[in-house]
Amino acid sequence: MESYFGFNSSSLKEKFKSKLAQATKLIPKDIVNKAQNVLNQRKRNQSFTSPETLDEDQNDGETIVIDINIQNQNKKKSNEFNCDESISMKKDHYFKKNQNDNSQESPDSKSSNNLDDKFEVIAQHRQSLKSQQPVLELPDPTKACNDIIKNLMSFNIKNLEQQSSYRIKEQAINIINLINQPKINVVALQDLCFNSGIPDEIKGLRPLAWRILLNHYPPDTKSWEQHIIDQKEVYDGWKRDLIIKPTIKQEEEYKQAKRMMDHPLSLSSDSKWKQFYQDQEIWDEIEKDVKRTRTDLSFFYQAVDNNKNVNNMDLLMKQAECKRSELTLEQKEKFIETHADVLLRVLFIYAKLNPGIRYVQGMNEVLAVIYYCFWRQGDELIISNQYLESDLFFCFNNLMSEIRDGFLRELDREQSGITGKVQTYANILKEVDPLVYRNLQEQNVNHQFYALRWQMLLMCQEFDMSNVLVLWDALFSDSERFSFLNYVCCATVNLKRKIVLVGDFAECMENLQRACDHLTDVSDLINDAKKIQEKHFKLKIKERIKYENMMSLDDDI
Image 1 (tube, one colour):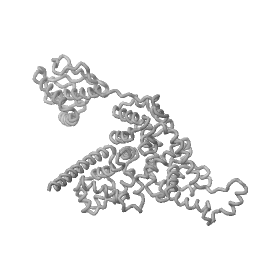
Image 2 (tube, helix red, strand yellow):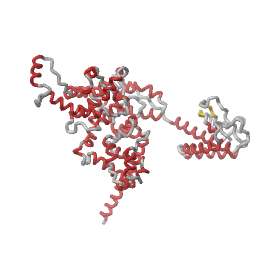
Image 3 (cartoon, helix red, strand yellow):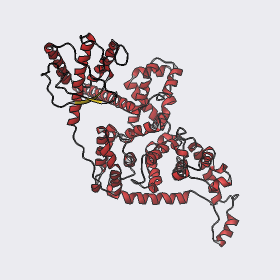
Image 4 (tube, one colour):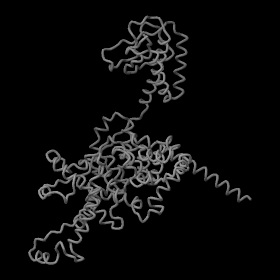
């Protein structure tokens, strides 16, 4: 007998039974047992052969209503499973049958009848779970602690009302409620963001949460407006003082003195031209790397002023291809500031303020993620763009204060340096997966060969930007900042475990360096990392108990 779509009904039955088995695993055992008891009782009481088939509607996607109290029209009523409300479900082609089938019951029709009943129980359980979910109270903008939080609430109030996903709605409201306090409990915010994440669907929520998690916005919410004004003034002052543009001043007397004392070939230690050429070396080094930042995205080569993106594509492409110093005079006069130029300026000021570290390749990639988050997921109506660059600088500066040792070559051999960080990860891998660790050792695979980039750049080059943002939610909200990164690295190795477990040097290196190429949802990797972290904690607890028992035995002796 063939189904509605012309496929063999027995094969469809097997496929659906496997799908049903998977779905049943999600239902509590007491519900499944109840359904089975109902079905067994129906078999004993049934005095008819097979149920009538559902009428075929003109549109496959049309919704039909199945009354749970009535199994089929003109048939015996089922009194074992009473339910007054009906469940609305989509037609499923697995239950469709040919209208020309004879009325005699077949094994397939029996099975299909049982599947109908089981599916009804599952649907009813899911419906009951929905009814048990508490009604979420939307945040009230009139009760916001400051204008920034008020803007966030007002901007997203309709979005929250229309949000169909209960989980996303609950996540957003919980985070907003935690932020909307006179003094934010940062530990609670970290815990919430780490365990539930920050939903992409709520505009401006992630940029605001990152500003708090990166210690730029203080816990005292009432001070935010004045704080960002003060910080912007500081940053603007650095821009004026550190970005040197040696021009002749307008005053005639000073102009004459300047021409005599300060010219492009001047060797004077206080010459502006000398300082300009020294700065130009840093500028060129940074610009070279910024041009190669996130080449998979056109965003960084677009104009900051979106109105200039339409009719200036040729000039923007030219600016993206070559350094500013290589542009013609006409192109320099028409120069359009792009997002890459903002990165360049922030990195240059950071290098000038931190001569001990200056600029190191890779900082551009770290800064690009924060900037992309602030610009793309923020909004002018929530936090004005006039504060974006200064906020960007201070968030980047605070982040670098935590990871800068990994960029310093002088600290490579120290525990806080990049070698020490990779070794810390390798020690964890040895404890949670000794077999993989042993094979990597036997194949002479140095963990720095593949994990140095992971540790140094917080995995930001392993995924597309949307996944990096989700991963960094977890990293920034880690209570022991960036220790969770070690478990993410272990979970990444676990993606290629079958090969790394037995592969030679070349196979291990190739697969580890491209471990995340086919990973589409980083949430799966984060969940795996949390399981590995839990496993490692349990191992540590066992070791501690074992050690304490040994110490107690020694004391007894």
